[in-house]
Figure 1: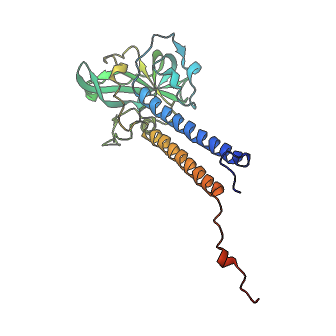
Figure 2 (figure 1 turned 120 degrees about the vertical axis):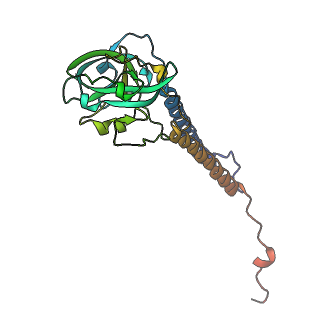
Length: 252
């Protein structure tokens, strides 16, 4: 007689299915959480929290600390003037313009650098010469931008459509931190840059994590299907044998 579906003989199969299903659901929720974090991190207002030294928040090889978006940090180091870039698509009082970004080698020349948004200009031609020497500044920490739908029309110039670390590092000769800082005090000849000038989160922001989340849930549906098929196979009564087919011919 085949076992019933809740027979102790099938508890192992039930437990395995539950573990796999919980894993796929949990991983799917995690990926969707990462997707939402990416979108939230794209635009985050600065807080009035106490200023912290950059070294207390993140290191040059650390991933961006998501809970520190917009947190004021202190930076000490040396300007890297040759790495100055201009980030397009930044509006200031309704006027399109550019962020002026110059990295700061945190801790001294040759050290990993943090891109610093020094201020805003309407045109790169209006930007003053990049600063040199040592600097101490306070600014708002932000995650790197990275909307995959944005394309740099001319990778050879110093104008970028977004502040992606992978693009910025092409213009400097040293490692970079995994984020950037908006200076609280605009540099000479510049207007203030603010977090309000960050672009809205694009429709493709974190899309890969969203699709991964859905994929894990598809795997969860597959687990349920395999469990259901297995239960049908092991609990289905065996077909009765044809008595005539099994009968032994007479005279033998």
